[in-house]
Picture 1: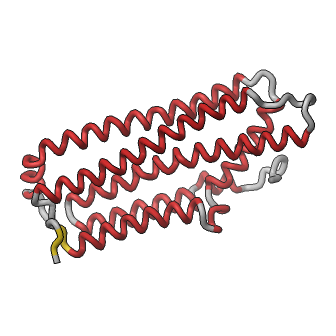
Picture 2 (picture 1 turned 60 degrees about the vertical axis):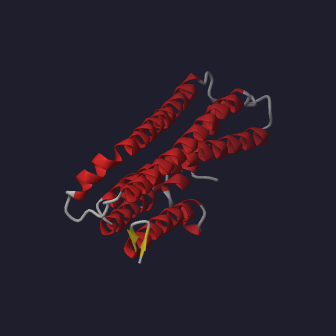
Picture 3 (picture 1 turned 90 degrees about the horizontal axis):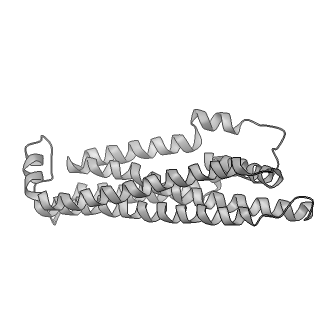
Length: 236
């Protein structure tokens, strides 16, 4: 069976790719296993950071940290736009690209249609990343406003200050979630590049990327250190 130049194994590889990406997002962010991820432990660190922030005067140190978050997100947002432009420019060099890939062993990208669909798929992934990074950057800007409006300890009740710290941490984690989702899309886009050779390499690349991302979320050395009890602020 062939559809627009794609074989059955190409369709299977694409289906596996979509399934792996969706499952990764659900397991890391929505499933019961999310409490074992690095993001969950970082949320607890964010809660403690916001508690400290509300009692720290002045808060210039916290502003510097937040600025680094925004600069990092802005870098990836700008990079995504540049990559999208380069990929769209690549559509204008279809014939040369197909000729080059045809000469490679095991390459199945031998027609204009196949090349253009694969390039458009990667372009869509980076456009998706840009929207995630842009929204994350906007949310980090909002958080600065929320931090500026924070209640003063001693003026407001301890309960009010604690609720405010929890809310700020939740908003910060949400902005980080969008950033991480955009960053993970970069990794999955790298898997799609393997599809230019053939579907089997695409399948192996998808599995490899998935394993790497799962390990970083659940079993990285950083995660092991972070999950060790700190004692003095290990409370929800």
